[in-house]
Length: 325
Image 1 (tube, rainbow, N blue to C red):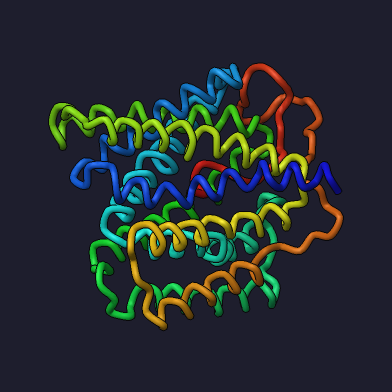
Image 2 (cartoon, one colour):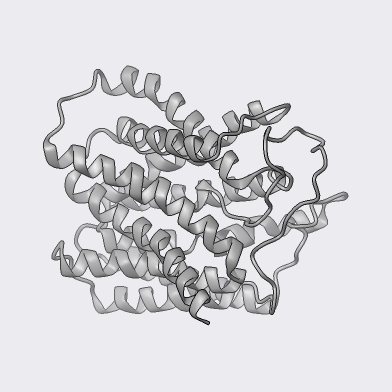
């Protein structure tokens, strides 16, 4: 029990850090630089994780890292950055909490494929559908109550981020069954950051001089809310049941709401409070119940058909990836 509490505490670092990312981005980072802001979040984090897990892609994973890096990092991080600037932190973090439910609905058509990946071929259970039916209206209450600070651009950016993260998670699970999760994440972050640098230079112009507070904020977002958060998350997935880790993930929207209301002075209408409650209830209902299953599962060392990562045997300890946050 004491050991489990330590793993729970370590795992909780991830959703708390992700929840603070919305507040830090909204309060301290330049609002008109989403491309360079996303690059400064992704690339340093990717390089740090590459230093932790020194493995290089081989075979198909060279182009898979590039594709997933563009989708899960370049596009997703830009949308999250924009949503964080355009929406109150409490609203942005709550909307992103519905990503697991959206991913479940998007993955549903895969049950009809022949052949299909075993880890995706799960027809939603009644409890999963009930979770979606409860959580999605909660998001509508959070966004469509006419509260101050919730505009159409922010809603579109947030909705697009949810869809991109859900699709990216599905695609990553299809490709990473035999890949080391930490190594694949490191290469996705690195590839996504490298792709964003020339795009940011072309669209946003040369880098601007940043204040000390902005530099500290970028350091926090890259090293704590991205690199450290993913290491803590993957470690928890290796030592705790997946259902436990999923419930710990609810600290993400809770942190965003607490920071937004207590520190940033944001106010939630009664309808938005009910929306938050519905989102949390829907995510709890939609979590897979797999009693006794641990998050650790070592793959038998064997060559992957589509290529893998050179180095240690593949680690299938999680279904998580950078698209989650």
